[in-house]
Image (cartoon, rainbow, N blue to C red; front, side, top):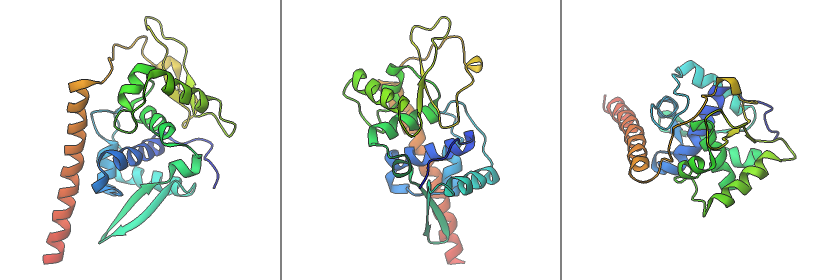
Length: 214
């Protein structure tokens, strides 16, 4: 079971969403294709925001399956998809949370990353998170994180993931005004995500029930 050398942005987004939803909405995991696409195309908690089509999602799933990163199961008439990221990359839960959050939300400072990882894994302090970041950056198999040069006007440097290769530093904003998504703001975003996911699942269940009754 070998690690992929490099993923496409769509493949990384698909993988990240599967990891996220396993932790945040376990009752609906594994995900159907429709639920997966909804999670990929969320307007909140995503950087960048993407518009992934069904064909693009299926293509990404096929590619990820070749690396054993996707696990398929059948739930009634609907195929469900899960992930195998920890096993393929040999990562503990804290490292999985870091990589997933960087995939879904883009480059972040340590403070931003700690706040945004909260729902996947709660780090005791910034230093413990930094220790995992350093381990991921110096992996023997292949580095998975990198500390980016400090952008002009920025107070802190940001970390990025390397699953899609080295990020284009020139495309990053000169400075970030993003504050830590903690407290009430983070709770509101989290609830919105769950509502969107649950709505998609309810719609699918209604469709399945209607088909069975016809």
